[in-house]
Image 1 (tube, each protein chain N blue to C red):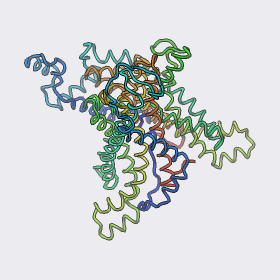
Image 2: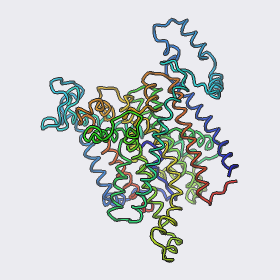
Image 3: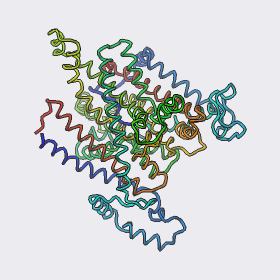
Image 4: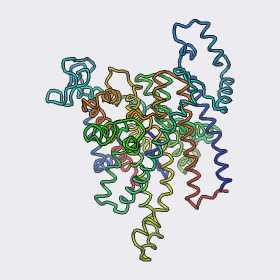
Length: 306
Length: 297
């Protein structure tokens, strides 16, 4: 097992390198001279030239990329053009809030989604089934930012049960989590339903019924175990959507995470911060999918690792 | 919400070249949810298309004598912070949002289909290169990629189309490559080759037609995703520039007035939700109608 994990880790290195190359290339596509952008139109040509040399912009692109990578390996993502703070420190201050939101949403989405899928599949074509599938369809069609605002309108403005935004107490976590989880709940519920329906038609499940096992034992212990294997993959892929949704959810609820940092940096044209945050987001997504792959091998005995 | 892979269609077997038999339309008409989706869509497109006739006044011009009016007979959905009629702005906004959606999906398909076709049909080193590139782009969450592209390119309709379109292109590469791969060794392709058909002819006459159905279904679902992504960018203030009405941008403006004037954020969001829902319903229906074997259990 540990050899398998190690191999997957090694295989993730080219992907991560590629990610740095894409981000590096993208930021270089920004029209105009970055040095001029930093200093503004009033700065003299000499000042601009000095900053260009200082930032290494006078070097050829491969050299710039190599330097960028070398600094990255030392944990140096440059400094924010706006605050002058190291980008890594800015991200470090915001990362925990984003991870917290993403983790609670994933947990909530998995529990609710799987439960809803089981209810739906075991009562196929019943009102329960139709209700769950309709809600799931709504879930994949709802704009997260709108859902967030509507929940805020109901629970913060009208009912006054929950805070409309901010960070700190568990109460602050409720609305952003529900908002962000909604889409994933829908996807996981759909996947669980179709996967479980497939498994429920298999011979070994009929055998379990014939043995006289309770429906609880048949569904939860025999069928669900196998049905969840594809669901695990979906949860991993879902995480990318979750990170994208987090950018919007954080904006709605004034959640002090990386998403808001990124949006603020884009508006302020603070490219070192944009570069750093995008890099961390992509790395996070890659690593979660790596973890899911490893988990997959763990839950599916048919996959041999060695 | 913006995962490109979330509603990806998978097409197991290759099929004979697609004819569009009248039965597709008949099956679609009998598909209740598809009809519902089509109806909602028709209503929204109708509203957008006829906006200049239904609402002759300029949807961008402020009317300071009637700011933030709640819904009434005169203004069914209320007025915004600049006194502009929200229904009129949603109707005009539909033109922008649908246009962005259609153009973005066309961009994705225009880039993704040829690349996927060549990659799957020829295989080899080119395929390997394309696959690595697709993997790399899929390492970025879809919305993040679109957001980064807009950060680089700048805001505005064209850039939003390019950003949203490019961010979804890998989905088409994967889809079409899969079909091309499964078709290229089938007997009918072999027969065409034995008859002396050239590669371009085989690609256009035999491989491409097999991609039509999955591409149509994927594009319908993708339209919903594109509208959502573009609206998300607009909501963050990184989409279409005001005062042009666009649903996401309007929603973003409405957020500021959420506590005092609920209607300003509620109705543009409802329009986004309904159109995405309609595309999802229609896409599911099309999949069932175009290939009955794909019908979900």
